[in-house]
Image (cartoon, rainbow, N blue to C red; front, side, top):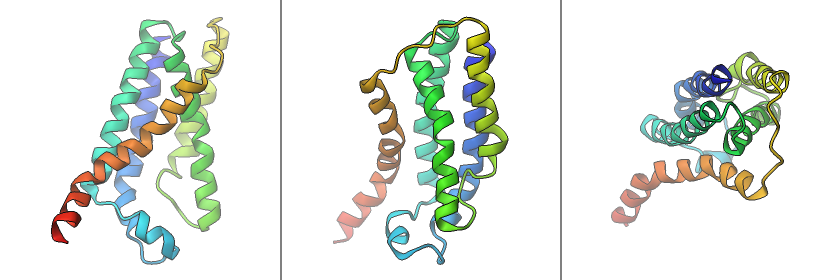
Amino acid sequence: MKKVAWGLLAAWMIHDLEELATMPSFSQSPDLPRPLTKVLPMSRTEAATAIGLTGVAMAAASAAGAATGGRSKFFQASLLGFGLHAGTHLAQSVALRRYTPGLVTTPLVVIPFSVWAWRRLQASDVPIAPSDRRLNLALAAVVPIAHAIARLPRLKRLRMAK
């Protein structure tokens, strides 16, 4: 199960390297719908900080999965979230009718890894933990919190400029 557990971190890293490479230029694109241009602009430093903070959570989830043979609720919830978030990448690209960060590695890495990992867990008779609503909510908050923390220096600069 160590391959499955650490594979989650590896798959996440590949996927998020694509996001790091493309997020800053995408978020500052002049052809995005107007409401998004006010919310999205993100520097490379902000993107790297948000991705790094999220990576800490993914590394912890992978370590928990490796330590428990894939039985950790934290690991399983993180694996589920990683797989399900593929839908957000696909939906964003459909809604905007264009490339969005993470779109290339979604069908090439995120979806295939997630399917493979769940099949490996099942084939190894690893019990699938029942959903834990509080854990799922906490994990769903990781990315928005990471993005908010990454933008704190900019918000402080804006406040000081006023």
